[in-house]
Image 1 (cartoon, rainbow, N blue to C red):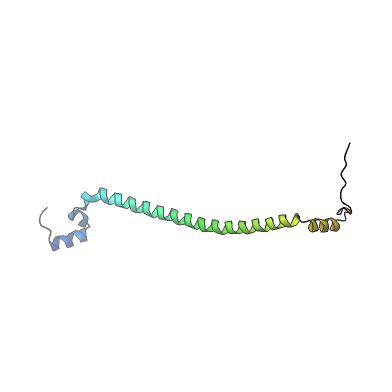
Image 2: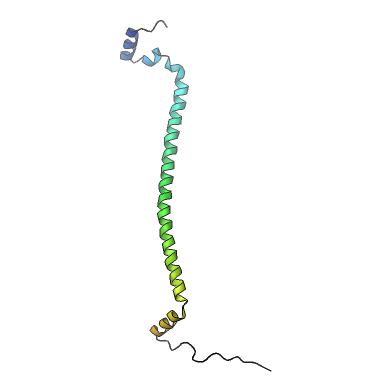
Length: 109
């Protein structure tokens, strides 16, 4: 190829041969690699963003489970109190109550 002039550049732009005039065909493997790397970058960024959204959603879910666990722990501790059990027995119509005299120990000789 000869000297690249302004006229040749304009003619090659109009005819669609500008890439051949600039000898970009030698760089085609590098352009394809850059294109592939660009797509990989976009894909990885998308996956990272989805993972971060999932982490945020799981943080909210974990906080709700912590609150639920605290409520259930409170209910469990409350159920273990003698006054609560007596109240539940009375509401259920049971005649069982606290002993009026202490338990006796049976001993054998």
